[in-house]
Length: 144
Image (tube, rainbow, N blue to C red; front, top):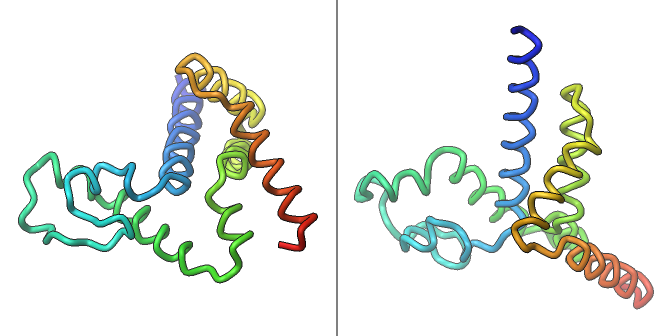
């Protein structure tokens, strides 16, 4: 029973990290808070939290507000290459793998399962990674 609870905690932690990384690497316009017109495309709050209904409040809970504020901080990073790397899916996957291993999980297994799930959902992971590698190499070779 204790091992099952520990395993569940590891999975929940890995999922939370994945959700965090996925949101941090997505534009503000893909967030529910934007769809509810609570934030603008730059992440600035345009509505008072007191005026929101229950569904709208879920889109700006503590976790989502953390994401919004961190995204705004990342956008202030002056180095465009570093800023881009902080927002890329491959970087997010590496961070997720490392976080899973830090909690005693099998990082490669977590990455493989997420990759398989995304592939099953029609997300072309290989194309995302290939584009990232191409952009990284071209950027480095052009002195960017």
